[in-house]
Image (cartoon, rainbow, N blue to C red; front, side):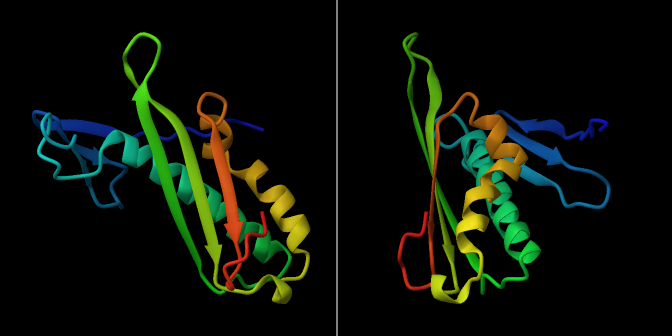
Length: 148
């Protein structure tokens, strides 16, 4: 299998505000550090990382559900990243907690155990980031019961 290449171009606008271009057909996103460093006019790099992890896990779960012809009845994902200082006193992402909520109750989802047992393994971003940052994933069904 050949490797895919993706290019993202970041252009500094002012101080910590960068225009992030993903390609000609996609809108530009602006990233910025929060005050006091930046103006807080866009997501920070830590927020972008959390979004990438959450988005990839959500996509992987949706794909796994569709593979088994199941309807999640909507997916809502919340991601919390913890930033703190390492041994050298430098800020680092120390951990990421992901909470995925399905709209459907577990009882209505066939093969749920198999789906939950495999979807994380197909998430390119979480599997890559998780090699350096601990990622905790929890999945809840539409009734609020934790199923993973």
